[in-house]
Image (cartoon, rainbow, N blue to C red; front, side):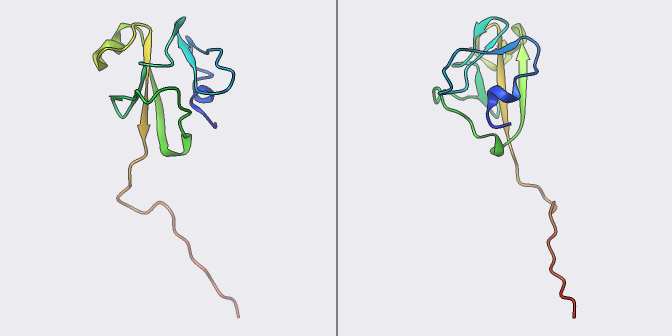
Length: 101
């Protein structure tokens, strides 16, 4: 996946909006949710129509319907919460070089 719209491709009730490829535009339950419905770590991400880099994200959460009102002044159709990657306490990669004689 290279953008948020690709990550939301298989979510029921979510579709791409016509944005001509300039930004991540999407509709949730028929309403435009490109601005005002994108949150980053639970906080409103009102940076505008930017394409978010997927490599810095751990997961993409979609809340549909009136339950999205729990996050604040979001649209009634739903919201998208982007969760950033956090540093892990233990190492998840081990690299070693062996020299054979």
